[in-house]
Image (cartoon, rainbow, N blue to C red):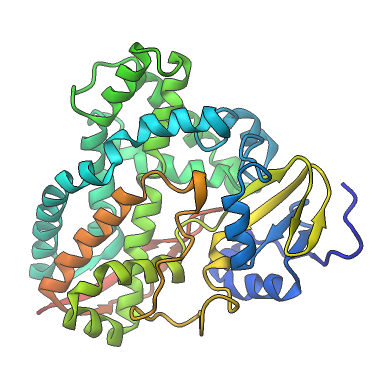
Length: 394
C-alpha cells in the first residue's frame, strides 16, 4: 500500500518486549506525531488520540470488523464471521445470543453470589497477611466462578487461563509470541468443539447457546465460536483489570485511603483503573472505501490499529493523564471499546471487579508491595504474571 507523503511514519514496534513493558512513551510519541501515523513495523496505520479512536469505534459502517480485527492475516482469515470479526446483522444476531445472560437484570441476580465468594476469599488472604494478587485474588472469580456460570466441566479448566492468553497473543502481529500461541489457540478450539456437543447444565450460559442452535437462531457450525466468545474474554481481561487495580492501589496509598473513606467511589475507581491501565491495548479496523481520521484522508482498504490504551491517556481528553486519581470522572474511558462492538461482557467484568474491591475495602487497611511485580507479556493484554503484596487488616 502506498502511504500518503503527508502522513507521518514511525518505526516503533509496539509489540517488542520493551514496548509491552512500558508502552506509554511510545504511544505519547505517536499521539504527538498526528491523528494518524503509519507503522512501518506492522504495515498499517495507527489512530491513538481519544476523539479519533472513539469516532472510529462508533462508525462501524466506515471502519469494519468483518475483515478481521487482528494484526495478522492468518487469524483474520480464520476468525471471519465470529462475533468479534463480523458486522451488521450477522454481528448483531450473534451478540444478542451471547448477551442474553449478561443483561443488567440477569447480572444483578448474580451479584450476591460473587460478593460472597470475594468476601470469603479476602478473609482468607487477610488472615495470611500476604498473597500473590494475581493467582490468589485476580484469577479466582474469572477462573473458577465464571466457568461455573458458563457450564464448563472441571476437565480442562486448569488450562483456561493459558488458552485465553494465547487467543490474545494470536491477535497481535506474527511475532514469536503469536507463533508460540498456536498450540493454545488450537487446544481452546478443540475444547469449544467438545463443549458444543456435550450435555451441559440446563441453566448455564453454554446451554443457552445450544438451545439457540436448536431453535434455528444460529447455525450449528457457529456454536463453538460462540463458546470461545465466552471463554477468552471472560478470563484475561478481568484478571488484568483486578490485578492492575491491586497494583495501582498498592503503589498509590493515598488513593486507597480515599476509597476506604468513601466506598461509594468503587465504580468510579474501577473506571479509573481501566483508564489508567487498559486491559486490552488495541484492535484493528479496516476502511474498505477509505476514510477521514482527524482530517487525514486514508486510502481505500486501509487497516488501522485502534489504540484503547493510548486514547485513555490522551492529554487532549484527560488532564494529567498519567496520574491515577479515583476522584477523576473516568466514565468515558474506552477500555471496553465503544459502539456496536463494545465488550458484551463488560457488565460481568465490572461485577467481578466491584465485588473484589468491596471485599478489600471492608477488610483491608493497607495494601503494599511485598516484592517486585512481574509483567505477563502478551501482545494485547496488559497484566501481571505475579504481584506479591502484603495486606493488613482494617
